[in-house]
Length: 287
Ligand SMILES: [Zn+2]
Image 1: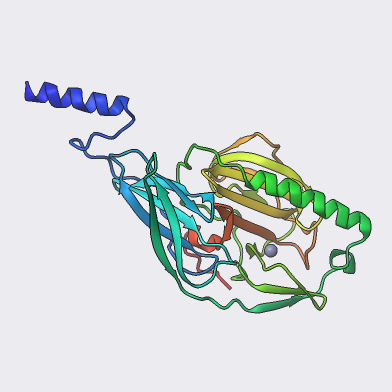
Image 2: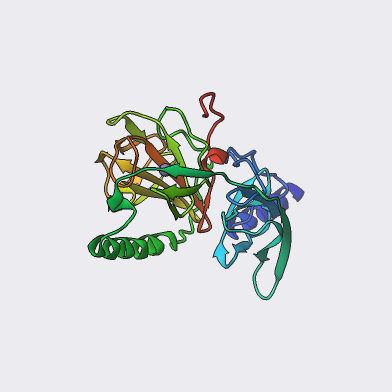
């Protein structure tokens, strides 16, 4: 009789979308990224047992990815490169007016400066190119503000190409003697024509040519986790396409603002570019 009662409670919990605490939840293989509490890094914060409904978490007003890992809801918080070191907060909302501030202590990480020489047209933009760039920036801002509710099936990325990974994420960049935005991704050395694989499953939200990024594919993995692949010589997918992990999306190239062929690979969390290395398996070939 007791057993039947427990079974009923479990079914009721399942109906409510809750995990039955009496049965426990199976160990997950969500593959959490490496935490690193620096600008451009990631914080992993336990925000409550996954037997309860998932809370909504926000960083600087942007919704944060929350996944179930080992019976806990874990908030996977992207820490923007522009974040000030010191105490910072994320907000945890559990419905109604229940808002909790969680404190994080961000360490400083000085990023070096990198000087690069590229074609002058990619530094001093013509009126026409500037208009194009402004239009593209607006388009990207729209794409990046999407928050799809379905969480990614895994956070353990596969390398999009084999090759020497430069540790150039976050570098302040000077192109032809002029200061520009920091480097928001990782460059992987590979020859033109090398196949590029989706780092994880997701939906293609952009497959198009951009002034700086060249031929670009953007994949939405769910809940604000987005990956971007740039300078491709060829795009093999189109917007709206569902991708499985490792599926080919195009070929390495040297389109856009580049010094030579390579793959530029970026990862975004809650609207913040984070170091892609934190999602990838350890490489023996990091520069
Ligand atoms: Zn790059």
